[in-house]
Each structure stands twice: as C-alpha cells, then as structure tokens.
Length: 173
Image (tube, one colour):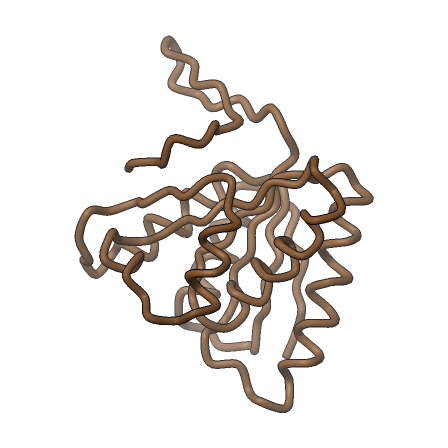
C-alpha cells in the first residue's frame, strides 16, 4: 500500500502491529449504480449522516472513490471542509490505474483530498475487498448505502464492519 506525501493520522505500534487511531474516522460503503429516482434521497441522507458524524466528533472521512455513493459522500465532505478546517478527506483507491479516471468529479475531488492511499499497484479480483477492509479497519463508524442485495462489495463490507464491531449506519434504498 502506498500513500501520497500528506500526513496520515495513526500511530503504528511496531511491537504489536496494532494501529491506534488519533482521530475519529468514518468510512462509506455503497452501491455504484444508484437508481436515478433515489439519488436526491441518498444525497440528503448522506449529508444528514455526515453532519451527525461531525456532531459526534468525527473529523476523518474515507471514501473508496467509486461512482455512486462513494463520490456523493466525498463531494459532501469536500464541501463541508471549506467551512470546517478540522475535517479531513481520504481517498482509498483500490488500484493505481484507477487514478487515471476520466471522470471530472473524481479528479476534482481527488485534488481536495488530504490523503490519497493506493491499496494495490495493479487491478486484481480482490483489490476492492482489500481497500474496503482497510477502510473498515481504520474506522469506528461505517455508513452504508444499501439496497438489500445479499451479495456484492457493499454487503461484504457491511458484514466485515459488523464482525469488527464497527458502528454501522445504513441508508436503505
């Protein structure tokens, strides 16, 4: 895993290998293909959850920067960062060539990140899981935009968050 030169807010314990978080961290998991008639609802609910997280003391927000819920989440945090300098936005990129996305919103939001972490040099079938498990591992709260599917990355990430005893906030669509 590699990171850009921006400061990362955790301590790594050499003896135990444990990560001690210095800030309260919140991550997003959610579907890429959101139904058009649900997008405004998702935006409204994500904003509500993010504002609640800030009120609860969360200052570090991690997005996997996939289309759909991830980019909506990142855009809201980026907007809120303008008036709240304590907020930090991290991009957890699953594989390096994803950084070459032609999506203008993706590129605009990447530029607003405090941390950009690339979790695999190349694409491989498990790179999204690796990225998702990282996000859960360093977060105390996970917000899930979930449509009820029993399979897929969002459901897998929710299961992992539950197994790691993370606080899980679900926006049902």
